[in-house]
Image (cartoon, rainbow, N blue to C red; front, top):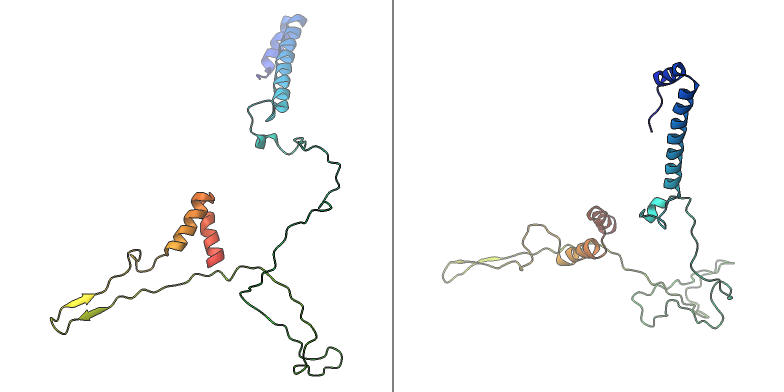
Length: 193
């Protein structure tokens, strides 16, 4: 939109009232077109134009496509539900024994227990890098006096390197889960040190 210069206004006044009106009509027309263009831009969203949904901004109206249900919220009557299953075989057993009476302080270590209550916690074992050192040996034959050296396994090529499991995990996170390289590095540093 071009603006009207002071020189154009002065020239229009010199030419008379009709010239001023013509100049102002042109300005109003141009201004109206610009307003209509801006309003049209504001009205566009991802539903009525090629704009992506991320361009709709925070003021977008969202409407759920789900139909209202007659049922109350939460678990429904008769539904068994799902939770962790009790395991008969455990990897670690920690007994929290009663050693003293909570009232008088009497030693209870030799007293037989009335009952035992059990609870289970399903958790991951500590995740840590395991460092495996490979050593090769050199021996001299007492018969022919030639040296024989054992060999490192095929995957062990460097002085210090990551093993196949670590490389496999990094590849899985980066290529299959599509986690960027820098974030994959952060995960490896945070989880494994």
